Length: 609
Ligand SMILES: [Zn+2]
Image 1: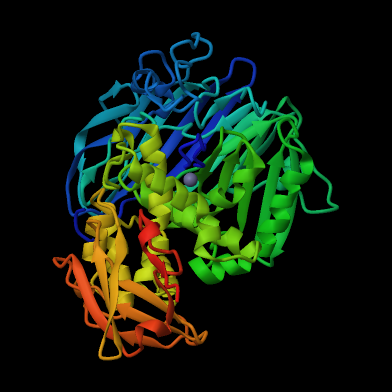
Image 2 (image 1 turned 180 degrees about the horizontal axis):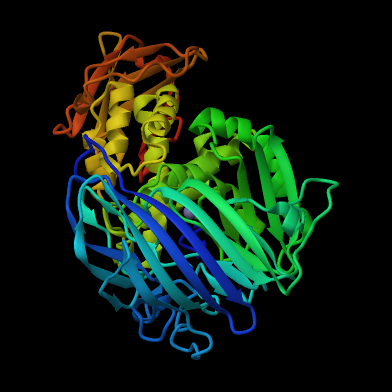
C-alpha cells in the first residue's frame, strides 16, 4: 500500500531445504449489485509440500473485520485517541467508522458448507479466521480437494476493499473477497487475524468466474478468457462482440502463479490499454471523479518509459498483463494489479509486483521488506526518470522521515510485527523510510555496483517464493563476499542510531593525522572524502572489521586508500595521510549522503587558511 504522509512522513534463520505449499482455486461467484451480496462456490486443490502431517487448516475471512467491535474496529478506536503532535496518529480512513456501520453496510463472509474430498468438515469461525479440525489429516506430499460454499456482503468501503467509496465513487473494490486459506510454512500456520496490516498468501493458480450485471466493467488480477463475450475494450481490436442474452455477463479470469486475486467493478469505468512490449499489455480502468483524465493516462506513458530500467535493475516482469485500477483507498498492491484511489501512487504500487508480488515476503512480519524495498525502488525509478539520482534528492523524503523518527521517542525495531507497532507514525516511518534506507545504505556499505548485483540475485533466487529477512541478507552476503549480520542486527533488530564525527586533525613531521569518532551506537564503514587546496580529491576508506571485506572502488576518478579496519568496540579511529595539514581544504564523512547519520553537522570540516 501507499502510506499517507501526515507530517511524520513518512530474525530467525535463512531457509535451507526450502518448500512451499501450493493451491489451485476455481471459483464461481455471483454479485448482486442491488443488495451488494456475493454468493459463491470455491474448489480448492491444496498440496501439502511440507514434511508435516496437517491435522487442521485455517482460512482468512477478512470482511468479518468490517463489523462493530471487531479487532480492527477496536484497535482503531483505541489508537484513534492518540495524538502525535497536533494530528491524530491513527489511519484517518478507519477511525470510528466501523463502529457506525449499519447492518446493510457491514461486511461479512459466511461459510455455508465445507467438504474435504467429499466429506463434510467441522469448522469454527472466530471473526476473521476460520479453524477447521480435519476429519482426516493431510499427509506430506499429498493433495486434497476442498469444496466450499459461501455468502458475503460487500462492506461499505472502509479500508482496502468495499463498495461505494466516498472519494473515488468506485462501486466495488473487491480485494480480500473470498475465503482464503492461510499460509503454512517452516514456522507453521499463519492464522493472523485481520487487524490493520497486510497479507501473506499461498502460491498457486486462480480460475475465477464472476457473474455480474451487464452494465459493469471489470478489471482484475488475471487474464480475461472470454473477451469476445465481454467487450468493453477487452475484445481484439476491430472485432465484433457477442454478448449473451440476459441481465448478467460472466467474466472468466485466469491468473497463473500468484498468491492472491483482486478485482474491481464499476459501470462508468473507462478502459485504456497499452502494449508496451510484445508480451506485456498494461490495462488502465479509471473514472475522472477525483483526478483528471490526463493524470491517469500519464501512468501508461511513464510506465512504458521506465519499464526497461526496472527490468534491468530489479529483474524481468514475468506476466503478460498488469492492470492499474481505480479503487480502494490510497494505493494497494495485488498480483498483476493494483487498486489506486489516486493515480499518483502508481509507481510505488507497480514496484510491489517485485517486492510482494514476486518476492512474496510475509507482509505482517517483514513490512520493511515489501514496503521499504518498494519505496526504495519507486524512489530510485523517479530519480532515474527525473535525471537526478543523488541520494540527497532521490531519498530526501525517506531520510527526512527516518531522521524525525530517530529523534522522536516513538521508534521501534523493524523486527516488530506490523500490527504491533504502538503508533501508526512509527510503523510508517519505519517500514517505508527506514526500510528503504536499509537498501540505499547497503549500497554505501557494499558499493553501488554490488548492490545492483544483489537486487538481481535476490530476484533470481527468491521470485515466486517467500523470502524472510535472513534470506535477503544471505543473498547480500554471498554476492558481496562480506559479513553483513551486524548490519541486519543493528539496522533491522535495533533502534540504535548512526553518528560519526570528525574529532581532530593535526600535523606530525609534515603528515596529517586525522581522528574520527563514533558518537552513535551503530558501527559503519567510513568513506572520508579529502579535498585539497590544489583542487584534487582523495578518498580515505575505512572498512568495518566486522565486514571481513572491502568495498570495491565506486568512483574510478577519485584515488582511494584503504585503511586498517575499524573495530566497533573502539570509539575513536586515528590514521595518517601523506599530505601537510595546510594542503587540506575540506574533509567529509560520507559525502554521498547514503549513510543515515543522524547528526551530519559533525561530518564535514572546512579548513580556513
Ligand atoms: Zn506499499
